[in-house]
Amino acid sequence: MQASRAVEIWVGVFVALGLLSLFFVAMQVSNLGEFRSAKGSYVVRAHFGNIGGLRVRAPVSMAGVTVGRVERIGFDAKRYEAIVDMRIDPAFSNLPEDTSASILTAGLLGEQYVGLSPGGSDDYLKDGDEIELTQSAMVLEQLISRFLFNKAEEGTGKAAQSATDAKADSLAAKADTAAAAKLAGPAARSQAGPPAARATARAGDRAPAESKPASKKPH
Image (cartoon, rainbow, N blue to C red):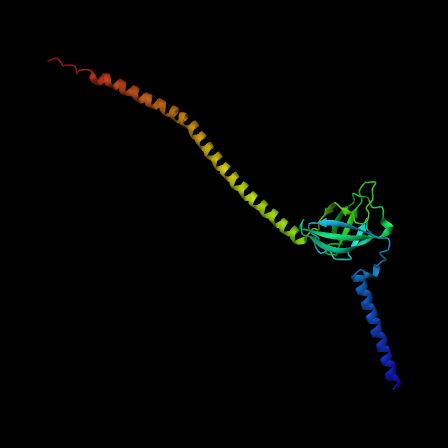
């Protein structure tokens, strides 16, 4: 009886540890483990043409350091763009006003986050300000389709260029043949000229001989 009780206790302990591990993993995946108090923080906004797979609570980083989190994602019906509200930690209250924001990817197929690049302005971003310089996410499908389209255009251009070159070569060959025939004509006539002249001369020599009357023999 006591052995059975001990087994049940150990099973309960292992189940509790498993649940705690799952909770820890869920906290890490959802970025809730890095939740900080919003006291003293401020919100800045940015418009993007395409946010890709960006999610709420995605990191906002500068130079590889997390300076905030994505708080809200919406849609601007007037500009037909995505709106991203970012809550910045109060420790980073000196971001230049001309800071730019880009949607980047951690690794090749990792999660997407917002990367900030500081500008050179002496004025700083405040709560409610908007970041004007933005760069949308690079969608993998668009990159692949653009690559295939460029390859198709290159193939079409090469085929057209080959056809043009073949036509030019054909015209050049015809021109060379015509030029060779034109040069060969006078040479053939010059070679045929002297025999014809000699034949004419011989015919002229025979003509007087045939025109002389036959001499009469004396009786």
